[in-house]
Image (cartoon, rainbow, N blue to C red; front, side, top):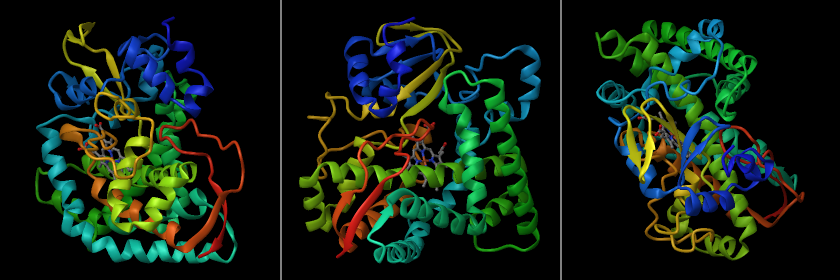
Length: 405
Ligand code: HEM
């Protein structure tokens, strides 16, 4: 096994990946991991190159390429493999360009501005519910319900179904959290995926007859207008948006607030200077981004940083490592809420750059501003908080105590 494999599979890496990212970047920035079955990139330049050049580094099949399965199993997981070989996030231009144009309609600056007062109202309501208690779990009482409510409203699905979304999303991405998932894990992910697909198919069927002012109606219309979008593509894009649209933002808010609690000088700075909200959000994305492991597949034999890569090999881009690359970010392990420039890669780069970024950039500062203004004497209610080992980087819980400001 390679020099970093045992560390990569340790809980210490899960709890704090940054020391290992630094070592890998210094000693083997293009590293082959036997246990994960992929190349790993930790340098900013290599990661932007591989995200930008989709002709050499494809998104197609990237999530199922490294599966190591006996022949009869492939047939059993065919629907999962199929899902990850199509739909917005898993295809390259020009198919990608066509789908992205359609889904983008929901995320134009105008569409996002329309959500502004809605987001503020939900934030105010959620925080109001906690104020009298003097304690809350920032994740489960606050930063989880906010994005799930917002995304449900945008898509036009009942927010009352959020427990279903949460369970399905966690199970669907479950297979991506482990490098070589077992057949059991794959089948569990697939069952949740099929359930979510059916859920969307039913809503599409309703919206074709009874249109509303929501994203599903817009996609249904595109589908009806001919060959713009097939039903399968529309459903698969909805799965991506629903999964991408809530847990990532949950953890952006919670990771950002936790970073402030650990850096009291930055906490005070931000509390006293609301004009820093936007740059603080960019710094939270850089410092503790919720999505750390992106993937592509080499489409031909090529080199990265002088290392030979073979056609078909999987490449994992550690976005959190790029975001702490000292050649781009001076003093990279320090939280600096006014850092400029701050061209982090937390939302990716190139043709697949996160479509939901404007929404996350609306929700996170609104949420964190409310925590800073409405609470005082905030302290952690427990020591030794743990990071989860799921696909998205976030704490298992973030219990705090406080007084009403
Ligand atoms: C902090 C929050 C978020 C982070 C860190 C994040 C991260 C990312 C990243 C890294 C990618 C690129 C993946 C790739 O290159 O293969 C991406 C794509 C995407 N994200 Fe996000 N995301 C966030 C929030 C959201 C939200 C709120 C939504 C939707 C409401 C969303 C929807 C999408 C979609 C649809 C794509 C696919 C774009 C494409 O393939 O063209 N994301 N996101």
